[in-house]
Image: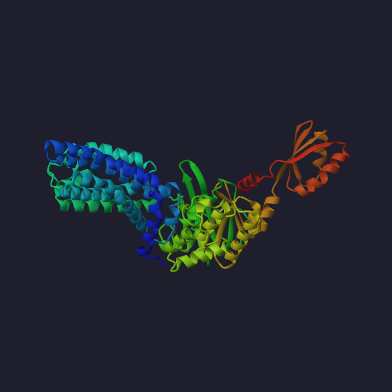
Length: 244
Length: 325
């Protein structure tokens, strides 16, 4: 009799989370995330002094957090969920069980979320506190969550497919998300950052972030579709890989 | 599977292997290659309840065969059915397989009971903790041990692997070199456990490259060498097959030519090659008789023996012979 996913998925999450959330990795990423807090703090002080409005921190968030910090942190943790199991050759202890492989994909994805949300939220909340604007704070958190979900699903898959997930992920972040996605509106619609920046722009009501941002409905639908695609690809790959 | 030792059958390409009644594993002309390397070549056999040993040297294709039976990798050619289905695709069948893999890694930061409990949970056992505690006691590990697996010795880790493979009472138990790392006492215990599981009707497949281990299991044997099924049968038949093969022996003596002439008069010696005045190579398929006669013969022709050295007594040579028959 196949066990219930309500039992198996939490059991796998309980195993995966401690494996990826090593103390060193978490502290390094939180420290990295605090960098823009410091920068924002000084910019905000400068703004307070010269009376300029506070769109600069929102820009900073858009550029640093959404384009660099969050994708990078998601890449590191999400690719490690299944990547570590494969690398350590312990995937077999999930794979050779009477459960649908989608359950392994979902458990890995949720494990990534559970680690990423606090790791990203903590410095992001600090940043929002420094900015001191409720709209910015909400926008940052919504955009960060969208980024975690969308990148998380893709990088979970990437970690399963290749042992060089960090390299390929970085190339994707820099070349596609950072460069090609910004060349035209059409290409931009194929990049995740278009939707995270749209969310930030809409929720924070900061039109300087992005010209013609997508509506929140589109952002949510696209995020769900990307997550579903990532999980489907991960399940498909789990079904066809050779396991050590 | 009770056939006497004989060359591995090579079915006609057009004739699929009919699964005999009671067959739990049907391996039908499987081959597996990795790029240019052929790991397993055209292997067929069926397995029923009881213990079967896969015997062969390192790199012979045993682990690959076990992995294919477990569904961890697909054959490049041919097919495998476990309990009537493809284990890669059928979740229910996977739930009836237990695997003790050769790789060392476990979830090291967990306690043994947690690791085995996870296996029980993922196999749908209702009281996973009780099942884990029970099977750990079966393999003589303390379920209350607070240490993590990473602190365990190799032998203890091996027993943890056996425990996670047994916790859901599998119908098919695949064990890749299960006695590796165990001390002599634990080897005896593990051998007894394997025999007991086989007697209970579980299909237990044990791979080993050590002849003596297989002998102790008293099992049916599949000899795999160079990726091919070289022989199959019960252990005694395989042992006889190995001993009755031709042997090559090097002799260093004071009179190689004289000794060669004298030895050729004996039956059972079917070839002598004189290397030089002091060395000859003898081919025989009756080593016992040869050993009995070589010293008296040398004495008879007034020659001194410096060395009598079998050249192909290692297991590799035995397997090579079986493959080349």
